[in-house]
Length: 437
Image 1: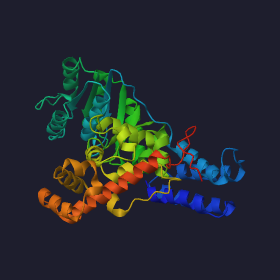
Image 2: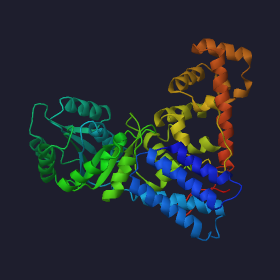
Image 3: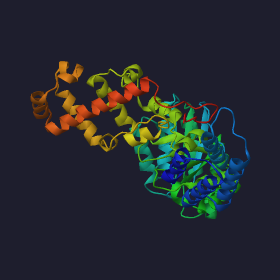
């Protein structure tokens, strides 16, 4: 959602020699351009930008803020207001029905959501009630089997309502049942009628509309029609990977008054998170989202994978790096992890070699460490040129790649020292990420 443009607004405020009417007008125009490029509804853009300008030029600066922090606080709060509240689904016995147009990502989202709740400790199952798309049954069954999630479906059954009724009997011992329904290329009457009948049979606790992040201004019309038909409780935005715009889906949610429940940000099943408006806006403005990062760690990393104390102690060895690499491999690209960290006030800049560390390179690092002696793993400082050559031969890599690992180790060691000393800026206070300028 025009991430870089909105982050540039924050940088412009923090680096400006003075904060006056002209700067306010300039940043308001920047925000307007960024939101419009992201396909946010024009009326919503105007409402947000007008409110930012009015408040910035009229409100007194609070005693706990300087003028720059005050302006950023206003931008933060108005973007929060423009997005609205999120939908928090409690961890208890529930039935969820997913609806949406064909191609929106419902089937993949069904599996991702089931895995999300499974990781939270619930016994989850999915139901293949999309009888229109031939591959939907096989796709959902394969995903469910891959993640040890319960599954119900009948490959040759064409009556989706009958499938759902039978599923309720078969899956009565499950905590969370998530139903994947059929989509179309447009909102045909037969689709609407089938959704109504499935909803009556299922009696879902939550009816969630799945919207593609790239849908743009068409999102509002679709959301209204689905909402009128069965009453939508929340929205799931899919394919929100940083290249898609996403503003249309966000606008639709706000315009109709439907909260956003989840966001899918990538292909992997782990690229799925509960929508937290505060954390989302913080990330848009480059302030990080510690809560989402901690939740991601909790979901994909076990205590055996990574000891938090070792992670932060600043004196960790290559053994700790080995565990760290395994954890990061599960969490996804380093750039996504760093995107959740609040770098405001930290003064930290990782070089391109570290930022672009690929999954393939991580795997090579593991091979290299597997070829080291216990002494070298524990005390990397003893690794000289002759040891580097031996390790490279033993791991099937090059001396340069061994040196890259050692460089990575030193960089992460220094990063951990900084984190331990508290050079991460100030943590959020009363919902607003204080930057410490």
